[in-house]
Image (cartoon, rainbow, N blue to C red; front, side, top):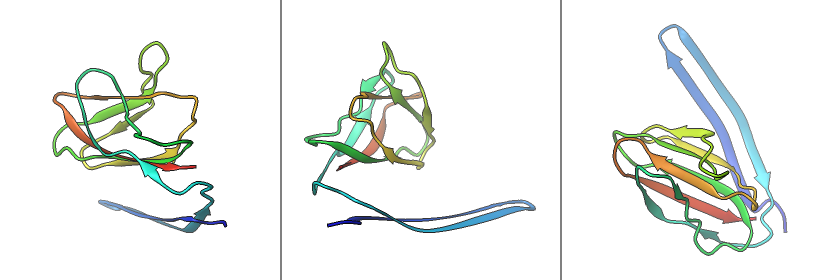
Amino acid sequence: MADEFKLRLSYLVENGFFRESFQGGQINIDQANPGRGGYVQTIGTSEETVDFGDVTTEGLLFMRNLDANNFITFGPDSTGMKVVGKLKPGEVAFFRVDPAVVLKAKADTASCKLDVRLYED
């Protein structure tokens, strides 16, 4: 089969006189193995590994910061976390994971709940 994963892309920015919208349509992505791992993980104020659960081959990763006040930073483990992203309260990240990389995360001021959903490749 093909095109098991369908992603619809659109956004709208309105800030004073600045306005921009994007209608990217739908992207279809193949998924060889059905399933996903992950759960709502509590991320503390020290670096910790993002737990993907029981996934055979890492594919697309969705993360959402469920905290109302604090941000979470994340990035690969390379003798300590190298920060490449930041999720403010309620924000999301969606990208394909390289199976060779260990992903770390760290909450800013207090522990935060992170919704982690990793889909099989």
